[in-house]
Amino acid sequence: MLSAAELDWTKKHPGLARSLALYDAGLRTEGFWEFNLQVAQMNDRQLLAAATWAERNQLYDRAIAAADRTEAEHDLGLRYLTPFRDNMRAKTKEIGVDESWVYGLIRQESRFVTIARSGVGASGLMQVMPATAKYVAKKIGLSDFKPTDITEIETNLTLGTSYLKMVFEQHDQSPVLASAGYNAGPSRPSLWKRRLGDRQIEGAIFAELIPFDETRGYVKNVMSNTVAYSLLLNNASTPLKQRLGIIYGSK
Image (cartoon, rainbow, N blue to C red; front, side, top):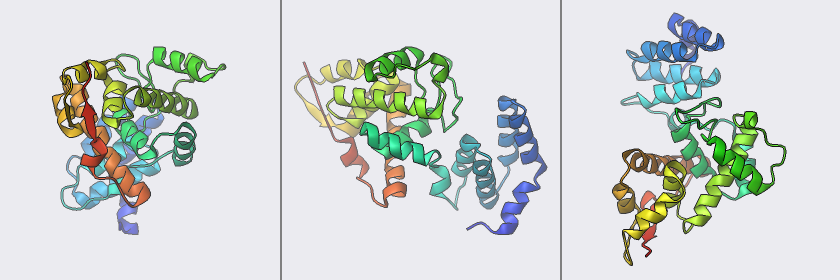
């Protein structure tokens, strides 16, 4: 537990204040690097204080980054933040997907930066592509959807969780295959399954055999994140090996 003095230290820290001022001025890149510069030499207690400060200022990606740097003293609640919890709980229940899994995916996709935009145009918390957003909106009857709505929290969660559910149902209700499909495209897991023929393998082995480096790392990170979030949200979790399940080949 951080002391009041440790938390007060962050409020008076000139470097953190500069970082926040840059963010507030719309200079996100500069604020990002200023924060990273300040935490580079911090000890564990200072890192946790900086992470708490960042969370309170809604700099969720920087809070996670600082908490991830600790070496001996850890706070899983800061490493695996759960912002937008009311929205998340309601939306995952409505769509019928595992809340822990969606949190694990968002942590990997955007680190909870609502305005995040990738180099290929994916946007928002769940990094939804424009074409995917248009397709899903039509599929679920979201008639008032406009492309400019894609970074709005509720809309992004609606589109992202609906799409994830579609990919999940398409691929044997396997979170491994669905996570891979979410990252690499929904048709790719089927191609990779065909390599197995009539064999079956553990999901952990299948994940290691994914031919795309980015997707291979993505799936492993999303699934390990899911285990951590399940522990935090439910005080219990299905073991990772069991959660990864068995992947059945196809011809």
